[in-house]
Length: 252
View 1 (tube, one colour):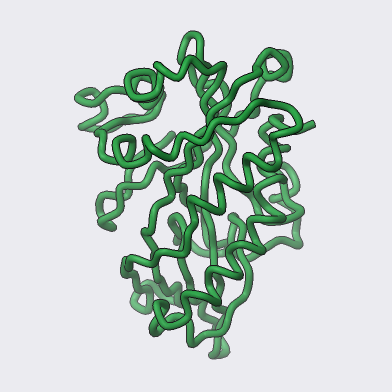
View 2 (cartoon, rainbow, N blue to C red; view 1 turned 120 degrees about the vertical axis):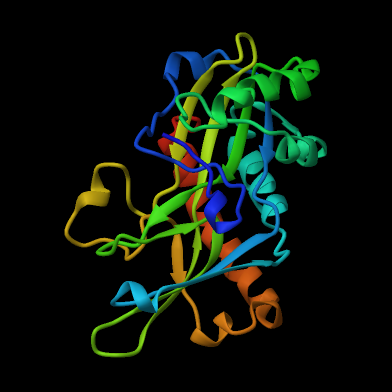
């Protein structure tokens, strides 16, 4: 089930227990496909300590070109199979539109249209076979009851002092059919080499989303390290985005 991180001040669509690849026969019927990345410049900085009293969270704005990276990566990965259309001109209207995801429950859900309806109303005039959305999600910090959201940095504490600082990118790839505007796929990103099944293995990443270790000093002033963070993000997505698209069965 998806919900919003309103308590954290983020308007982020969250992945829930449903992780669904597209039906391969349906995917084979698509020819013209649009890509909309809506990660924006939201950037979370959090700390996960040994006790709840040492947890921390703040939200920054950090433009690392995430949507350009995600859009270009998706178009490059999928171009051999589909005719791709960049839907970036709809990003602001899509983000600003109140909405909820199919199956999402909450006191405001019934008052807002579902995401497929918003896609139809905003982008239906493109007459595409399908619309691929890349939106922020959340992922757990393993071994704790804490989560990270979207793109950001997290410091994971240790019983013995020190800790581990990670750049994470929790995101979801969703597919909206262009004929009946139904949600056909909803695939959250896993760390490199993991899948829905392998993520339960004993040896796994400390975060259930794509992540890489980074220097601890990035936490204090991310804006001063923006170029380095952007470079790490590009490298991470070059490996991870094709993996996520493949797990969504948009790639063979």
